[in-house]
Amino acid sequence: MEHFIKCGDTLDLIQSVPKNSIDLLVTSPPYWAKRVYNGEGEIGSEKTPEAYVARLADFFDELKPYLKDEANVFINIGDTFFGSGAGAWKKYLDGEGNVTEVQKERKEKFFTTKPLQPKIRQNGKLYQNKQLLLIPSRFAIEMQEHGWLLRDDIIFWHKPNRIPASVTDRFNNTYEHVFHFTLKKKYFFDLDAVKVLGQNGKMKNPGDVWSINTQPLNGDHTATFPESLVEQIVKCGSPAGGTVFDPFLGTGTTWVVCERLGRKCIGFEINEGYFNFASQRFREAKGKQ
Image (cartoon, rainbow, N blue to C red):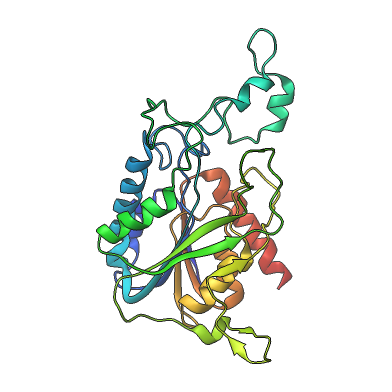
């Protein structure tokens, strides 16, 4: 299978892709105020959650001309709490306020030693500490306002092997959201490809709660798409031999899955380190087939 994989800015590289050629877009963009991937001005570094979801919706609007009318779009978005991580950093400082060696070793390469959330004045409403910001819901509504058709309200990516959290005043979060959008009311969808065996011995619709374990990989990028999640989406959201696009390729999960399932992958990744990791991962995965 011939793939089109490039390192660079998606909105520049997409111009070399034929319009109306993509069957499925599946991706997980950077979450708001979670990680530093490329530096100042990147998606995820916006000053407010509202600015983040508006920018994301604008970004996906730019990709509309390259999607077929019957295309599917699956987007994984994570949530966060207002003030998240602001106090947790203090326990890693020594008596003089310096970051300790323990902190350096504990935190992965692409986290920073300071909280990533911008300083926003608390207003006793949305902006107050411990407030769940509902970023996925805000994003879905923003996409609807841009004309996208939301077909699956929320597909829960339930994570049975989620690492336990130290929080004691709420329940540990064990899921993420994957939204399913389309351009038109009629679109490609192969439900038979993902049906599961029911208790009555007959095949049935798997529903919108998917229990899929997280998938750790070696390397610096820990925000990894599980292959099982992408497989489910590629099977139902694209025809055999179709074209699948991931504008935030990351560690290359979509690329690996497309090769295995007989789809052409178009994938762009702006971070050279991740791009190189994805390329090596693809070569190793292809060698095992």
